[in-house]
Length: 399
Ligand SMILES: [Zn+2]
Image 1 (tube, helix red, strand yellow):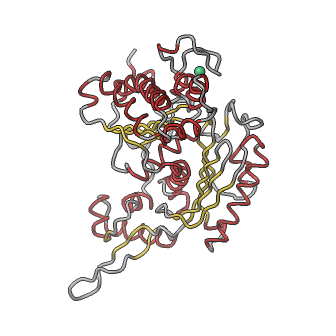
Image 2 (cartoon, rainbow, N blue to C red; image 1 turned 30 degrees about the vertical axis):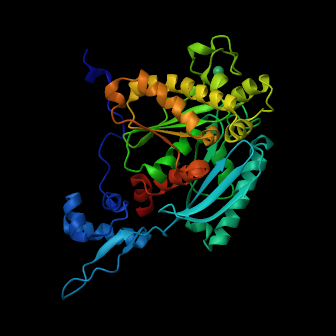
């Protein structure tokens, strides 16, 4: 039996009916273009392009672009993305903090609010605060709720992205399988996209510094350790959304170290912030959190520097396998422990360059996060923007 008999094509395999979005997708990059250029680039008839430009203008997604005047006669009609057409919200809800931003479609921040908020307070309280904050941000930016296109949310635990429900999140009591989009939509009837914190950090880092890099891994090193994987320019979530969960990969050196997950030798149990703090406190330092470890490193404590460097090597052990497996061109190191500076990066580089295949590391860059503590919130907004500007959403709006 051949494969073609086994696999029936998906029901939506037919090409979507041509509509406004094919023209729009070309304008998403912000470059102004004429109708003639759009016709040439899409291969559509000029009359068809003219209709689609009209539709998109009525929706407000594109606007005439001023400035260019031809020599004599009418100015050429240039069109560009109207980044003010809608606003979106990005929310980074951490274990003990929350940061929410309102942006336009180019990602420009129009207003923001932060709060010390305990995720363990439960979904009603946390999402109630979020809805109120969104209201305040809209008011501060002078925008109406009807201009809101989508809300992106990052949560500190595993999330089933398709439904927006957290699944068995260890540090989020009361959130298991809760319909997060449904609760938010009680206040704002817009699409709500939810993902885990590492994935939104990867998207935020991509939007901030690596828009032209299609193969990127973002590594968050904090209390936990995880990766956001971007391949072919797209976030890879895997079948159940757990792709990139590096924290519980076994490291040989840690054979008898107990992890909170019940196994032994997990990367997180060796190289996570609390693990490093525990090593240092056994050596007589006062340390219990990632921040304590960072403070000791910054104060020049040699033992703390060595512990962080060894954590880098342990992480590098696991990353060397990842590099051989998926061949990224950039690995970005973020999360709170990345603030320990070069020492963590040095340990990671040492092992990755030694243990990965030469061809895979020939052009590999291992870099500190540029977006830093804003990676998550920028990524959450980016998730929302991508949804508003997707062909499906543009077609639905044009109907
Ligand atoms: Zn574990």
